Amino acid sequence: MSYRRRKLLIPLKNLVNPLLVSMMLMGCLWLYQGKFEEGYFALLVLSFLLVGQLMDGVDFESNNKIFWKEIVPGLVLQWFWVVSLLLMMGFAFKVTDYFSRRVLFSWLLTTPVVMVTAHWLLRFLFNRCPLDESEMCRAVIVGLSDLSRKLDYQLKQHPLLGMICMGFFDDRCPERLSENRQQPSETLLGNIASVSKFVKTHSVNHIYIALPMSGQPRILELLDELCDTTASIYFVPDIFLLDLIRANIRTIKEIPIVAVCESPIVGINSTIKRTFDVVLSLLILLLIAPLMLLIAIGVKLSSSGPVLFKQRRYGLDGKEFTVYKFRSMTVMEDGEQVNQAIRSDPRITRFGGFLRKTSLDELPQFINVLQGRMSIVGPRPHAVVHNEIYRRLIKGYMIRHKVKPGITGWAQVKGFRGETDTVEKMQSRIDYDLDYLRNWSLFLDLLIIFKTICVIIKDKNAY
Figure 1 (cartoon, rainbow, N blue to C red):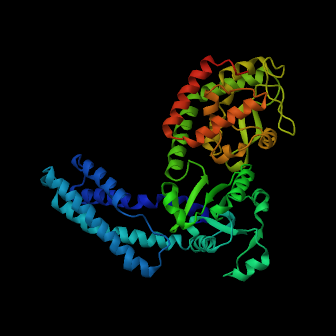
Figure 2 (cartoon, rainbow, N blue to C red):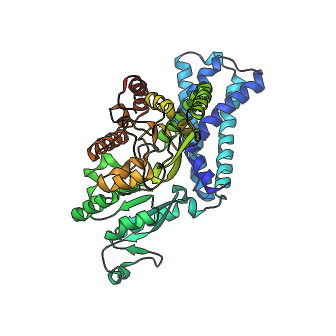
Figure 3 (cartoon, helix red, strand yellow):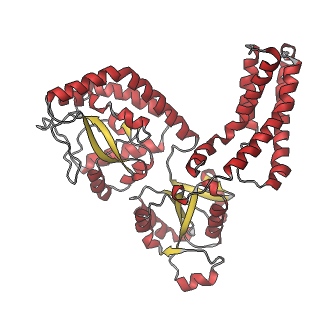
């Protein structure tokens, strides 16, 4: 199992106990009664929810001593509380007589044994997976202090965080820093002014700012420079400021950090959105497959050239990918000069004009969604050459790449669909893209999809 596959399994660690409890209940029921009775469904759902809330997930990083001394007793105690709650609810609602005593006692006694065994086996397998540094996120720390050294130590001690610290940036001279170094392995990468350039050239994913708040002008200047990157940025605040910003603090192994620029679609949100994308795009592709075949034939018959238009665009974290669309023009621009379509553009074919007006040319992008390179809803991806132009003209332009690009987006349903012939129009589009990042929710995605349908019907900006 590679590190990448192991990393994908980590978010599932909290589902191990609920799934095991449910499987054991069904197994005991089948063993003694040979069938699954409807009355047990409520017990199955209730126990799944209680275990998910009250029991800890798999601890992959504990050693054997801690596992048997702390983790195992903790699992047994947590299971005892779950069982106690289930019994109390059963007596309160007077339903205990409905369930088989043999089924319940077998389930209650064998479940903790199975859970302990599963936890030990998963730890055994995970801890023997190779760690490939090329698959881990790259991080740098701005500021060299006791606090930043502690953060560096925790990142190295806990590889399941998926980060490797490349080194530190600090403005103090190397001679002065060497006097205070506690570890010979500390790497000074340069001064603070060189952070932005290093982040761009070395594909850094995370930046931790561990500077004292007294250096506010320097911090603001650094943040301004980092707006042109796709790295996630965090503050590592001085402990004395803890009470001032407690509501915004998270921790990395008890070290407080404050997110400054981070994707809103992480953890369970990422799983929810990806599941939503896959299910909906599969359903749509199955429904529109005959339509896509007819469109492909129409494109081929209406003008010479390939059916699909392919173009390099920037996606998540500023990485290039190839977007697919039905060809609607006589050209296939994807170089140093890409001209946006304008009203009555002579390059647009007659059939292509119909496709663009109805947005049917966008349908192949559902394939991009299935590939994991796009989402159904998100900031619209721009051609690479346009990205390079606007990232220099619009502050914070690259922040929109903290999420996957979408087939439709908040800016498009707000009227910024089609040509952006001025910097002001592009600035407005970016403002809506960033607003989407700040307020993302599954409900907002559904609202945008609904509004997109309305826009396609009556929009006058598509050509």
